[in-house]
Structure formats: structure tokens, C-alpha cells
Image 1 (tube, rainbow, N blue to C red):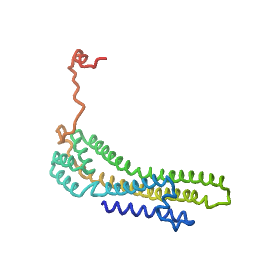
Image 2 (cartoon, one colour):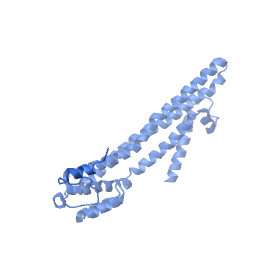
Image 3 (cartoon, rainbow, N blue to C red):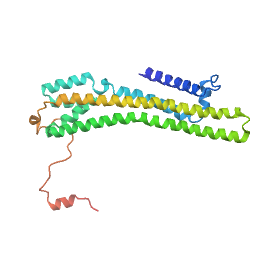
Image 4 (cartoon, rainbow, N blue to C red):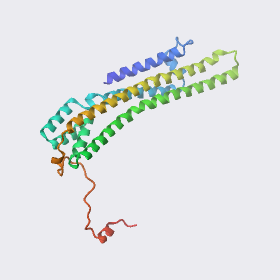
Length: 265
């Protein structure tokens, strides 16, 4: 996996410099990659950082949304066997230690089975929403990168144009060579920002679709497990070790005891 990330990073950097070189075509072909980077100005530093972050979130998102991470075949098989045997405490204990998203959803559902079907379904929906929100939250960073990098590139464009007009005012229009550096900064910064933004947006939408499919698959697996669950037979029993914070009301508490336990002003 480290080799894959290093290869992607190298490819992205070389591709960035290639596109930048083609964007700033006038006389740039003889320049090195370092020359192009320096010509782009200070905005190349945050754009480069954004490119590294983009690759990281793409690889991380792809790994987290794979079948082996969302619903490993071994976990699904084990849970099905435990449900078929009616070993719901065993299913809870296994799901609690398994660590996969599908196991977390099953754990939440099994813990609420003594409270009935409605509470179980609400617990499952809540856990599924939490997992989906966590995955979408990480993927949304790609959207942030896609929005910010063009703005950073445009900032480089503005600063480059300011330098160009400043040199134009001091040297006049008869010396265009003095404007080349500032114009190069304009082209390089803009191209670099767009080069990062476009794949960031593409990967964001692809990853979002991948998350949607993964969540749908988890819902199907969990639904098949709880389809014929004997809620009436487990009612009143304790399944799992979830903490219950709401106790039965103590109607026999005296006013004096309540007043004594109340915090003093």
C-alpha cells in the first residue's frame, strides 16, 4: 500500500508539472520542473500540499469503502451462523469485537432487541447513519480541495497580474521580457489549481457513489439477519452489556431526601 501511495504521488506530481508546462507554453519547454515550480510563485506550495492531501484521501477512501473493510466475508458468515443457532449474546460479543461497520450495525441492533422491533430498527438506522456520515465526512475533504485549489490558483493569478502591471508601469511596454516572469506565474498558478481541482471533484463523486453502494449492501445484510428475529422471546432479557442510563422512577423518595440531594446554590 505504501508503494501504491508513493506511485500515485509521483504520478500526480509529474502530471502536474506536465500540464503546467503545456499551459505556459511560451518558452517553458526548456525549463526544468523546479523552474516551473518557482515560476508559479508562493501559491505552488499550498497547491502541492493540497495535491498530496488529495491523493491521501482518495487512497484512504477507496480502502475504507472496500468490501473487505465494510463487510468482510468472514464477519458476515460468522454472524449468520450465530443468528441461525439463536446465539444472540454470542452474536453481540462477536460484533462488539469484530470492528467492521457491518458488525457495528449488528451490535447496535442486537443490543436493542429486548426493547422490541421498533427500537431495534431505530438503533440500526442510527448506526448506519453514523457510519455513512463518517465516510462522507472524510470524502468531503476532496470537495473542499476541489473548491479551494482553483481559488488559490486565482490568487496566484491576481498577484502575478499585479506584478505584471507594476513592471509595465516602471519599464513601459517596450520591454516585454520583464513581463514574462509575472505572466508565467499567472499561467502556472492557474493551471496547477485546475489540475488538482478537476480530479478532486471527479474522485469525490465517484467515492460518494461508492459509499452509497456500500451502505446499501450493509443494509441488505443486516435486514436479512433480522428478518425473522424472535422479538417476543427475547423481550425482558438482557442481550449485550450496553449501558442503560434511564432507571425506573423512585416514587417513594421523600421530599426531604430530594431536597438533601439537590445541589446547594
